[in-house]
Image (cartoon, rainbow, N blue to C red; front, side):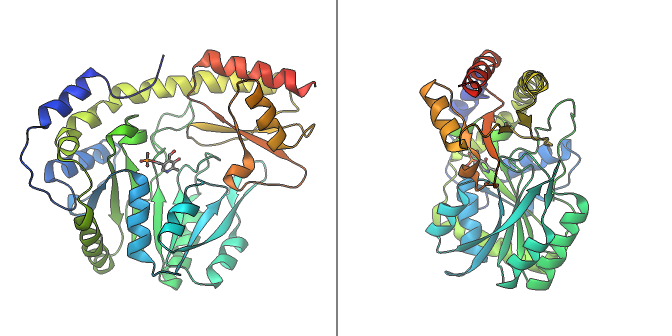
Length: 351
Ligand SMILES: Cc1ncc(COP(=O)(O)O)c(C=O)c1O
């Protein structure tokens, strides 16, 4: 059974909205932004509609923010390991990236020394991903406090990518911690329909801004100016947004059940085969599996591909540790597919 969040009801909402008049607001229509505020309110988070800007996907949100916050040749700090699209998105905007390390010692944590070092060359902004992709980890409150102090000292903003924030690993049910709330520096929180409702094709995401008033006003004026150049979010999807967001109430429980079932399978597998280790995580749609070094992680991925099993090697996400090999597995595949894939992994371990 597929997990797409867009059913006939949602497509109907889009069709019903298609005949509307074209009265663009660069930040997104007021009812659409109100719907995003209502989504956050249901999570216990307060967002001011005046501090929201809609975008056509999260990648576009990143592009806007690189343009807004950094001059060409400016620097952004990004976590490592993390989402591989940062590199090309930043390169397109002429922004240089410096990586700061997340380290794994039984659990993921922020390498504070590496972060301090990364800041030495200056930074216009720092990206955090909560929960991170592919580690599934969230920064602890003390780590966020340290990051915020460094940003304050260096005049840097925070970009918090929270697209997987609604997907804690079962048995947890509460959404993962957000950086929305009182903040000392401008903090741009990203999310959207792609993951919240399983509707990547709707191309609607948002930037919600937290932080001090004066700096936020300036940032919003800049963002509005950039968004006005493109007006990229279609009117029908904006008009349909209140109804589309409601569809998460059906989609998210299905994903959580899929995560529960697939994690159970994976945990049973690693319990039976202790040479494989599932790296613990807080949430997200993928799992990192440490695999025995009978071959390199690249070879693991290639050999599995030859057996029709698609995994990513850890280095796709800039995760390379001497003497270790990791592969990244999807947790939202059909349970039978995961079981079949694990059986092939087990066979391959013996060859
Ligand atoms: C961490 C992270 N951010 C953003 C995105 C992309 O979201 P969108 O489809 O809204 O561009 C992804 C997609 O997998 C992701 O993993």
